[in-house]
Image (cartoon, rainbow, N blue to C red; front, top):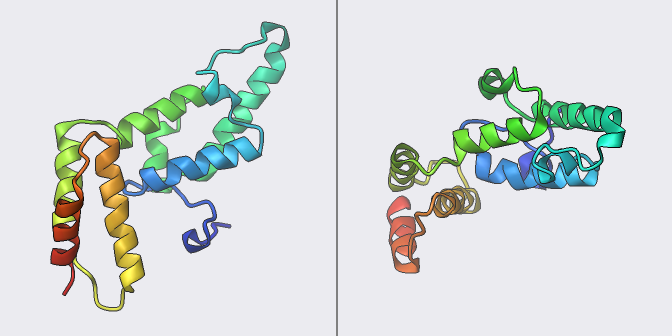
Length: 154
């Protein structure tokens, strides 16, 4: 059962929430002692325990895939290595390409406070876009952020 994102619980990865999903997934994997395959970049630090490493890798893949939306799942369904899966998702959603930067900037510029949405939800969405732009090396200064936020309000 998927838990609510407003409570800080795990959320499913969609095409638009990678920057929120990733740190939560890192925390979840760490709490379940499943982050080693990613932290070790897919390399088994102790080759004498190969069977255990394979089992850990498989559990990590299962945990990650459990929190991927169906619309994203088909892109990574064939991955059999947890680190390769992690890197593929990162490449898909955190790529520093001009296209990704332009899409994020367009979403930010076109962001408007919707009727029935609280200001808190709106500013959270705004901050998420700001964070995503920073993660692709497009940080916006405080003045620009303030102007964009003001222009997004009714």
